[in-house]
Image 1 (cartoon, rainbow, N blue to C red):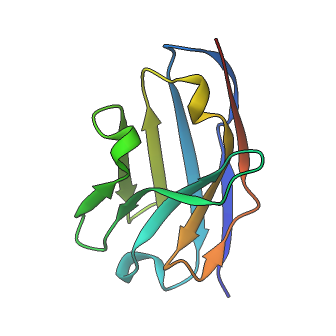
Image 2: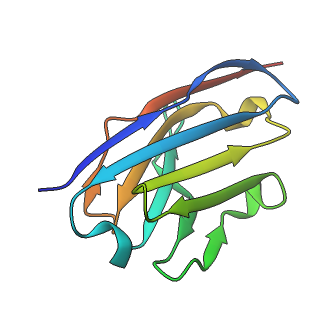
Length: 112
């Protein structure tokens, strides 16, 4: 059984940085793509960043150059380093394994 738990969200001023962490227990982690999605109030959930089992990455255009996704297979952890945060980055951030298993989400609020 896969359990996913996010942490690291919070309230921060525009221009600041946050790092989100995600732990994903279970034997699937090292062979699975992991991703971060977010959902802003009144909007659909959207992909922010994805990292494959080999370490390949892709990002939403809106976060390229500001966010970095990484993984530590030994620790079964995925991270999202977010720099130069903007108010439009506000939302609930969800970690997902293969987009099949989802965490409960962590709130990120960026104030102007």
